[in-house]
Image 1 (tube, rainbow, N blue to C red):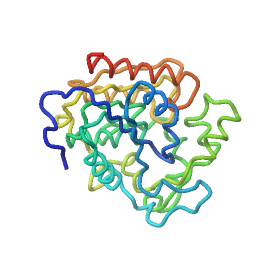
Image 2: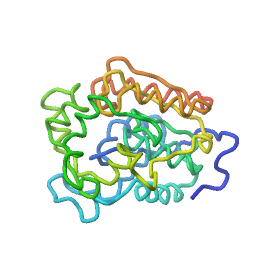
Image 3: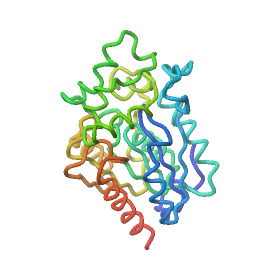
Length: 269
């Protein structure tokens, strides 16, 4: 699936901005950024990944556990092709990996990857990553079951820069995630379909890749490897003092401003 004219000479930065959330998330993850970029004149689009548009108190939807990265990417690709032009794709965490997969198909004018999950070929295991996914990967047949991250784990992994009250507020909005998708990312050597593979040679649009010094679930060292993979097209920034939750922790406005500045330069503003 590709948009006619994808690839080749970089296109001007679109005023359409598609924001792709990560694991356990939903459209609410982008509330801050949507308001920020709408005020700058961007038309913001926030698709919700398959099976994620449910109440946090609901039981996981049937079929979630076996939903794969290809399913998410296929849905997103169809969504993007309904837009009037190739948009800027912005993804956070697993959403950042999905954006890489979509850029490979020529569906982006620019991409912004915020603490992106790595594609196949990049080894990401560390003590903090192990702790972040221990609850999931120690469940029998986790690769075909839905999972919801425990509060204690979420607080350790990506909510540790929030106040206790804000931690609970964010956690109470999280939903279940696909064990299949998680295993395709974290255990890519065991995935015969290599769903998380991305051919960097096919990604020709300009990219901004942002890592965070205190990220425990996608450590900055991993994001640096992602940036190195795309060194022909990518600009990398590492943010001191930030954690994984770049969408809502104190100082998120500075991250959004960095993205806006980069997009403005790309568009000649």
